[in-house]
Length: 307
Image (cartoon, rainbow, N blue to C red; front, side):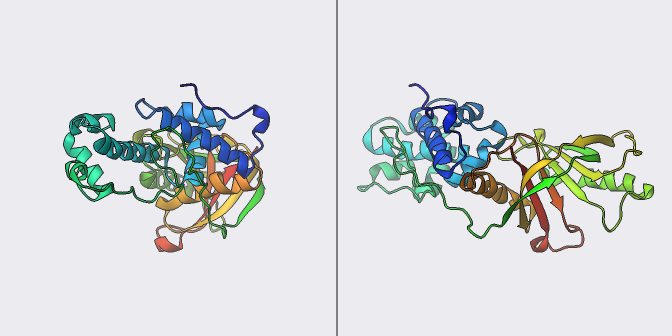
């Protein structure tokens, strides 16, 4: 089947209705290609979003990540096949993306509350769990039940012009949960040089979305602004961070939950406010010290570049 597409580039106006139509095209494509390897880049192209932000837009409007959505639909399809065909359970499990009967049984039981064999023997078909977007497996490969998820109406987002910055940084490659090592290295270098103080800015450049990038390939730069006289030394690099307009929202709480704030900005706020997202890395500004602040009280300004 051909990929569903929005009508024309002229429709890329950033409205909530337009964003929803673009994501709907992706949802239909997924329903039509559940038996295939689904490329995130291809889905981003269908929706006419940059791959950099597509997943966060999708999560914001659908209420689950792309691959979470695909796995759920494949499990729901397998439940339909158990009831409507006499295909072996092992074959259905393989088509649902599971390499072993055991892993499929665990996933199926977690969703439907009983094993695939018990489900097949049961008199009634159990409805799948609630989906935030209302989209379930459709044997006709549609997504007629799609209702964009309503975001946090209380989220306060402002548009801020952030000037270009010259920063010293340490590059971390690996899970975001382990970036503390880069900060320790940067601070141990900066402190004796008098580059840290009560008014110093602590900035993170987030190059990758952890929901779609393998943990071992995630790139993050721990940064502090510096003047023109500061030079690179060894693993301490110097770079210019481009300025421009950013959507800025306050995230309160654990860094591990920052993904929800990104999804709200990219998948809700930008659509409702007719704004397009830029493809450059997001900026995180850390307003308190995680070593001296309870996790629930951590404050981070999430800054997503706009065009």
